[in-house]
Length: 191
Image (cartoon, rainbow, N blue to C red; front, side, top):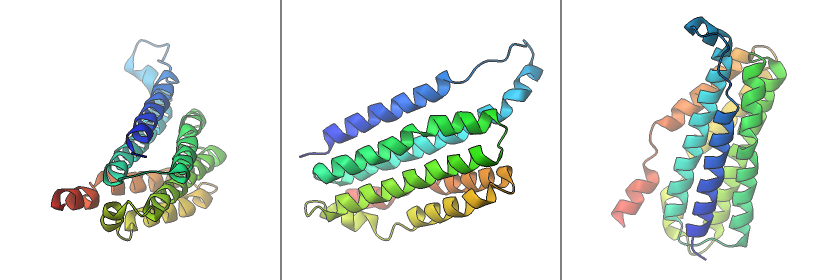
């Protein structure tokens, strides 16, 4: 089967996840800018999560654009990814509302780690399909994907000592992905 239905469903789920996150934001009761100060951790966790969801949405789009076919295993692998992404609003809210304390920051990292692992599983599942030779040529070694997982694995235990340091490690992973990954685009334009 083609990738269009899986991509459309995933786009809708990610849009809903982003909407849930913004609906969780509550304005301050004070009518001054000083009223925003207590909300800064909430806004910071929201911003990082929005960026991560945007990164997943963007890379998922490129991944499915390069894939020529999906099978039942790929559909389940995609649902696995969407499950972990759907937990990002919970981790975001808990982390922001507790001012980046140990367990919320560690749980947030766990969700990011499992989302990264599930994305890797989706990629490997698509690569196993014989009809996705273009995708296989475009993906290569997936260095950034491996480094991301290592970053999460390092950040989770760091959260038990310094929550803000772990949060900064999550930011570094996001920054790495904000640098455009042109592998798939280059391969598609050369074909």
